[in-house]
Image (cartoon, rainbow, N blue to C red; front, top):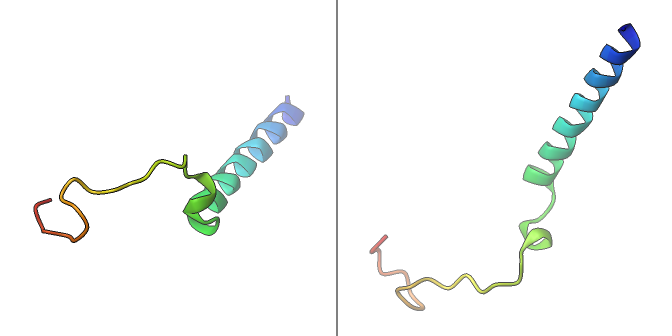
Length: 49
């Protein structure tokens, strides 16, 4: 039973660490889907949103 608890703790820590690395360290361009994120109001920011 103790071995299972250790495995679950290490797995949780690894998932948490991977989430933090993906969220804060890796650039967002790596995970973009290639769609163009243009705003509805055109080229300049009109302040409408």
